[in-house]
Image 1 (cartoon, rainbow, N blue to C red):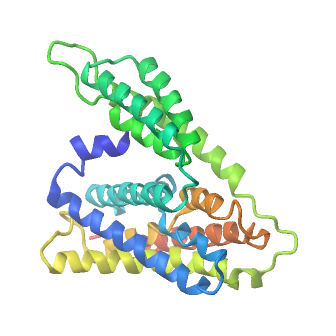
Image 2: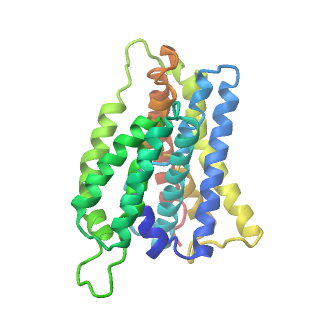
Length: 313
């Protein structure tokens, strides 16, 4: 819903303004993946985790930004949010293409029927949340049974939540209402609970030396170095070619600090890791989480310090 809101009425509604974060997000996806693959090329099981360091955790990155106050101008916050949104969209595409089991055509056809039902609700201007939730639950079950990861059902449902109301209606649009109502539950409930349940690293038998094993090292270098290199290189290329321009009032050192913060991949990285290694080697269990926590912590602290020490004007 946040993505739809930004694309239609927000920071991503203008093509030129949206092009820089889109290109930056692409660079921030490809470079960490290549770095992780380079560290784990000889291990076919470990190589399944190539997408782990490609994700950015919006909530945690914006949390660090909130600690910096006025050092981060509004245009830069919007850039970070936009990069993270494109980043999550890329992660969803990656999950659909590379972490999907065998497909069930019958279940996909049933899911398509529910999608048409959601489209009808949208076109009819239905503003009752219950109608979308009922079809959304049915869609989730159908997508789950199809072999495609059920995360996509949530994305599809959000795309059909109405952002406009019929001219004769005095009702507030459903999408901003739902987005506003769900935000505190997601930010203060669902995300922390997910992080708490999934981030546990078994410390028994682990040592500092484990950080230098290929899986955690590939994740750490991918998140910390790969994200900033990919985002900065792609942004510099886009600006040099005239495809995009820096946000108004934003300078390159500030953009660099933002690129470092994009290396906080905590929640989405944990999610991708659970898919990548759900049938993998037991040797990777715990090591990939260790890499995610270490890489995200390194990126978060470094990004914060970059903004603190770089001049803000």
